[in-house]
Length: 274
Image (cartoon, rainbow, N blue to C red; front, side, top):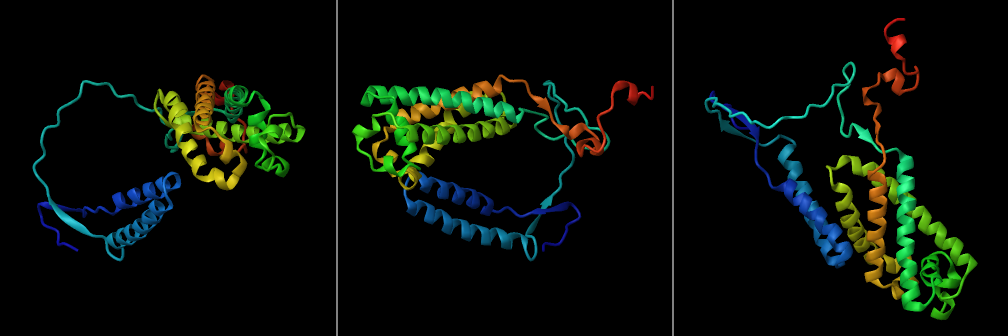
């Protein structure tokens, strides 16, 4: 460890290992939509970067002396700053202060499911002359009789296909809608539009790299242009429904007893002692 100089302070020494860890994680996920060798390289880089980062901190943290200069006058900004309201007692304010209720995520997921189903059935109608074609393709993931069925059979109505397709589509849509409801309050204004466009593209890339294992029948017959379009329709519909609903305040400003539901929230008369 460097010795302290009277006119200096000790700060952590600069290191590139955190950047290398971030890069390696990006390579691992990039390999999911490109080639497995990219993920392998990312894993190797992650291992080396983790070891290097470890020895930068343990058994002794690497530090360096930085000279301390005289205090200079800091210019003031004319921009106003929004201050968060303090919580009660010693509770710290957490972000986000307001969140969407889980029921909003369910509604958003259902709205996205309807929009996505409309695009998918339009694809089936234009490409195969049947709205049942995309439904049976989706159901083929869990219905073995549809997995090996010829195209002619997939064009016809199937009760098992309708039930299985509705279950798969509805369950995933509600789950993704709840993820939207949880994550949207954490992002700045305007994120609902960006997430409605960007998230479906990332999801499409993930599906493209794994669909061959999950649903080979769908992977062999899927039209990726229509698939991405249906995903974007889901993202836009779900995000807009969720973003337009009223948020609710988090419980961070309530006393611990009320957050644990040991005591009920007091009214104005009880708080004033009346």
